[in-house]
Length: 463
Ligand SMILES: Cc1cc2nc3c(=O)[nH]c(=O)nc-3n(C[C@H](O)[C@H](O)[C@H](O)COP(=O)(O)OP(=O)(O)OC[C@H]3O[C@@H](n4cnc5c(N)ncnc54)[C@H](O)[C@@H]3O)c2cc1C
Image 1: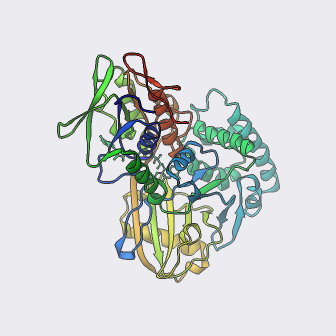
Image 2: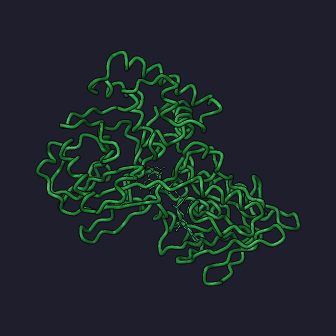
């Protein structure tokens, strides 16, 4: 518990900043959270839509079964019950044929894909065993080759790559398999496999049963109010201030100084330049900005006048990559009552082509695809279409990117970094953001308490 007036400033109110502020306050620290925008949540937010009296998300966020630190955060703010792992998803073909399958019985899906022979499926099984083995004991060059090159090396039949693994790669790394390095995919498979053994549950994908604000913010706001965390909105930090090798606080864009004994800087990679100019060695951190480029995601919340007859909560559309990749049934996921309309959300990751189109063009493209894959969508009318273009959604994990990610520790006493882009051994995801926060907090508090200048313990971690 806090024994001295130590003051921690957290810069950035996305998941990494929220988790940092939550865990620091849990340990008894005095915390100020500075967020540049008028609201918290960063890249995981809901958006009020008065025209349909709804609060959809900025894009579907799914959970891999290997995530741990995100769940620790949800436990801390009391909302873990709102994540569900149903164990399977739908794979849908044009015309409406659909298979429900899980990771460990993907063969059920492959059996239905036209052109995939028995020989391909046997080859795929062997290649998948090799893939899991190499994920657990990784060859040294996985950060130097693309996912596609890795599949070829593993002997994954091209037909199975196209039908299954290209989509899995986009889903897990957020980028195209011929661009994404093999390493982030291998890392995710390794953690998923280890967790599956530890928890005795198969590798699977989960989803929130509530909107992202309820999941991530409602509990945090309650915890912050109870513990007196001072949240300041529209507080744009311009620099982290350093004197004699130790952090002294931050300066805001309007010139105000906020003094601090320790700072966690939890801004995205594209906002880091300029903030750390006083930190010795900041050039190496800034180099990450050139390597870790933003990847766009286009999501559309489609309010329709009728059900399109989805079989599963989420369905991957076979052979539609790049135009519409997944469809999410908000009625099934959120228990939403379709009194006035039905809400389906669509996701296109790595949407380099789509992002430049107009809202009408995007909506039209998505509806054309829905009509092709869902017979019940043929006559469906769009009540409202809410297009969310996030040019900066996830981050490229191309060849060599793993080595460009800096760690959470800095050369300055009392200063740590957090955010999904930092080196945690995890890919650039919500889990990466929370994991970096856990490491930053642990680093600043120390495993058994931070020592003040006189050497006495000032803060100890609450158990
Ligand atoms: C549409 C979409 C879908 C996604 N899907 C998934 C998914 O399915 N699974 C998954 O794991 N991940 C997914 N992600 C990625 C995930 O959302 C991010 O990895 C994670 O939210 C990043 O959190 P963060 O705290 O590191 O950064 P951010 O959420 O970007 O937060 C950083 C905060 O810092 C603030 N800030 C910046 N500069 C300053 C400054 N100078 N002063 C004060 N404040 C500042 C920003 O305003 C922001 O609030 C998705 C992202 C998007 C956009």
